[in-house]
Image (tube, rainbow over the protein chains, first blue to last red):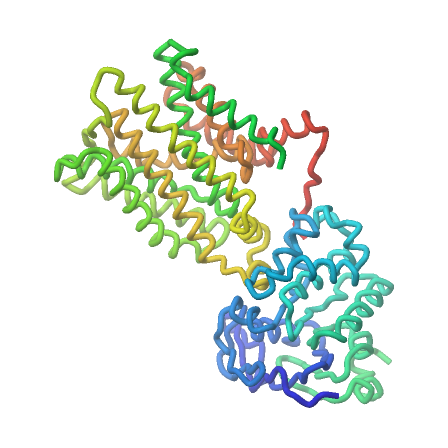
Length: 238
Length: 315
């Protein structure tokens, strides 16, 4: 495993109005890793991704990417630096075609030049999308929509892909397929994945952080966490 | 892109250019002139309300700025109406920067209300300031000397319509248009892919305000009398939105179809409706939103091409 720290989240606190969602959360992602943020509903996982991608400003704490402090940069600047956020709930442009959704993923000049190659790459990874390239995205099935969302994220040629609950609302079979695609992607990009399905998340991750009520509960190698009795009881009902 | 796609535009502008040769009746010519003005307004509104999906009901603000600029600069410094138009366009752009940067922070109904408020502030200013002569209104200079002043003004309006139309065609096909549509469909995701919604929306509003202000200036030059209730009233804002939505929001031809249908219908019903026309517009707006979200253009598409674009539910 590579040792270079790609993303460093340092003691971030974040609020939605008066409600405090994160309490001094810290963690790291190293290059080429797949790191899972795990935890129940409302634990603060999504908030955490929103802070990293600049959609939400933290009250305190720092986010560093490749050693550079990116706290407070605009979402556009952060995308340009190489972080792509695939938001929760397959947030597509529903009335645009699959292809148009992908094009919009390469909004930035840096990635626009290689748009064609990147679209081809994504169609190779998700052959299903190639078949449906002209179909309106809102009419796709849940699993296909998730593929579009992930592919759109990859179109900006990120160094770090933030995936928010890619399995949300998907059947067990589709969850498995989607996570298999994520594992495939992790060969070319570092992944920070948020999952409520703890077991499935740990299956594709190298390391995991378990969050509860905006605080870090435990962390460790995925294999260790899977075997952890406390975690199995708390999240897997075993 | 096949050549046939340009045919409707060539025919449409050809008919407008040759109007005096095939339509001799002065009254009907006047209606066509009104169609042209309202088409410009609908097209301009469509950039913001259609493509970017920001339902402004305060666009009359820019119309009023254009109209009042022609009258005010003429009265104060004896500027000719062309210079007044230019000043109106510049002022409307400045107003758009201010109004846009304030109102675009808001979404949904809050945005709509804030645009109405911005336009109402201007109306109340025009009503209460001494140099705008309050409710009495102002005399505006004509653009051309008689004879045939109206016809010349008509020919001055056509390039503006063409400019507005060309801008829409460009928007429809360009990256800029995609960004606007992305913002309309999902503003948060647009941000997540790196689009800056505030900047793109403001760009659309600047184009839109400039066109609306120029149309307002033309209106002042033709009717030569303006007041807060004619060029700054909310009816005009509603009409701009209605024209675009009735014809088909975020389509190239929608606002033009809407302008033709609405102007002709309003003219035909004028004697029966009298002051009830605002009620008529309101009712029509509700009906279009409920039963014809794609506008009249969407019906034509279904009929002619037998190809219905599958409408998606928001994910």
